[in-house]
Image (cartoon, rainbow, N blue to C red; front, side):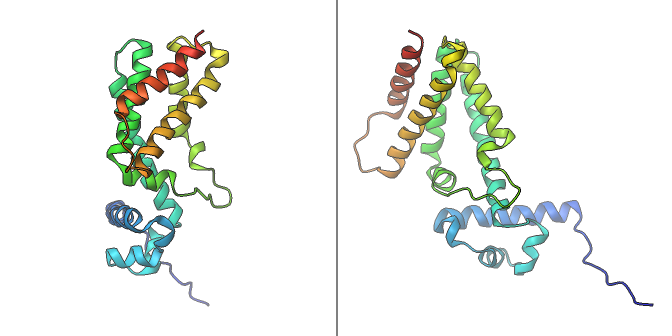
Length: 202
């Protein structure tokens, strides 16, 4: 009889969690310093003292660890935005939500660059991160806030797209052109979003 070869013993949950945490911490550091494209799986495992092949016991590929980091970032971002909007009247809640969105990225510029200056290239059979349940839920919430602020539901989708472009315009400009003598980002955001919503409510 031919003896069956045994594979490696599956990692227990505690070991799996600890290993993933080590790799995520290393990835956050190296991706922020060198850019995602310039960091290999071998470099990540060297940083954590693991063997290159051991990486695949924790994550199937480098994109998976990037998505893990993006999920953590957006969980934090959306929680802060929702908490800030709180119990404000509808239009004020939208403005505060948007101001918090911008403030978060300006306070975490390395996160912004890691998310928006890094192309998302899904593996075969995978969706783009922008199609994830987490992002879709946030967009649904933003759409609802725009409607509650007085925008006709038929115009809400277009208004939301303008709001998103305006927010990223502020973030991208202040983060990538810091030498400009920019106005106060809170006031800039409030004026832009207020004007977009007011125009849609006419």
